[in-house]
Length: 185
Image (cartoon, rainbow, N blue to C red; front, side, top):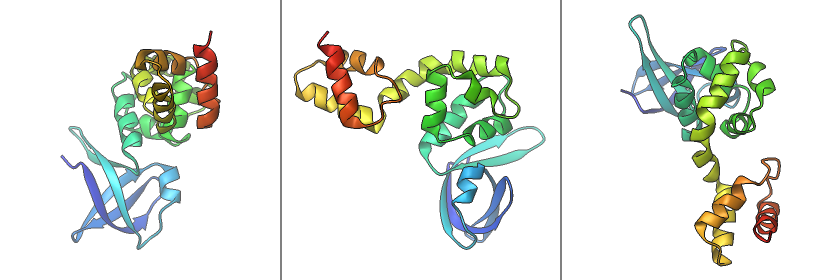
């Protein structure tokens, strides 16, 4: 199985690109957002999901390991194939999609072509619990955790305080203030 590829971008197509690695051209399916940041003759690195079926062998490329991890989590849901998972990732960053799932935001998920209300509900139901751990480990939240731990709070208290903070508060110092406010109750 192929885990990653680094090479020269030879061609860019609407949903894929041709990446030359050691004189071998690989067709890699990539999200529109990632394609927009690439140029022909540019060296690029992709985390790869190697998807093998009876009738096809496709490579899906991601610029970050977080995008790859979310893609693979989406594939684990019945009714979500690689095309739909890639389309979901084209809506925004992995963090944006995770936040939509954590908040139960059906509107964001159903705005994706190929994702109806039932599929969106299934995605939220199945991934929400898995994403709690992932969301807690974002870099901003790690900084908040460190700050709370240095102030003498236990890691359990810090985690509980973080769970209650709105995802709309993105500034680290504002998140620390909100966590302290919650802990002082």
